[in-house]
Length: 459
Image (cartoon, rainbow, N blue to C red; front, side):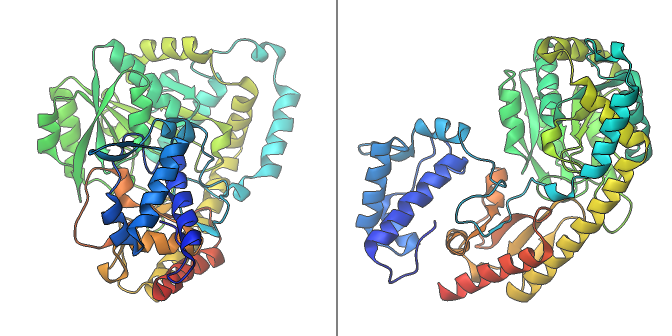
């Protein structure tokens, strides 16, 4: 919780507590239906009076953020749903936040404006008039060919342009797969634990329930997968989100053996597979069995999420159903945007952009590791040297986690705890963080970690 330092006027601390609770509801960190700690327990954890917490609960109950059932505690109310729908992009700049380490956003200032504009001019000069008609729902043929060649070269996939569907990012790819699997009678799909909660929301919109499946240091654990009863799973094997591991060869093989045994499918979310800093990236899972693995990716991390351009390589058995669902959903993506991306890829602009981003993100990752070692000694960073985030395990002496996050927020540093991405809640007292660094300048990375350390010493 964001609270002024001990010794500040009680009224000021009360207002700060109320605002911290509102923000937690608006951002979705406190979801509708979440039961809050008792006033006594929260007061003890925060080192404030019970009356201050009671007043905050009563105020937010009156505003509709919370609801209180006599004898049953206090819960996040239905207003949370509206608040979350109206919440701002957490990386778009939040009042009071000096350094934003929340993961998921690339550095948008790296978008290649000049090269993109040149590709647009070239496309507009040569694109024939018929190309501006209603598109093939799979996407512009020249873009599908360019993407298939690029993905085969860079990610080791089996990429037939006829089986590649251009879509509005991995989110739409997941939704397309959800609708198709639902139509085939599948009502449940497995997701990694820890993993992205967004997968659950996307599949829920198609009528498919998600089932958390536990990971270890090698990938999905085979036993719980076999016992789950699901026939489809979503995985991030090249750089698991958020743990940062790369699945072992044995677990990749076991997953594909399972898919064949249950006549099921795997959706591979290759959200940042191009970004590896210590060696060549691990190839995509899809290359091992393109008839069981649907492969999804996008330009959201390499160019910009606002372009809404991605791809889905579809197993042959699902292709007609996916294309028909794409046709009825939106008739296909905008032709001009697809043509520009095709030009950008075929002329080498995409490869140059990836190299540029890799240099920048590697520098920021190095700055983060150095800052953690200097200001929060003993912090362990897990996972491979890849992607746009790290998992940092801060020693328990800097905790407990609630205090750590409260002091960070007080210093104007936005952080996400690992516990928001799964069901596991370790009780060892260590503070586990998912730290996004791609959108933070190296100097700001250092400043942010220093601010947290200074706030902890003051508190």
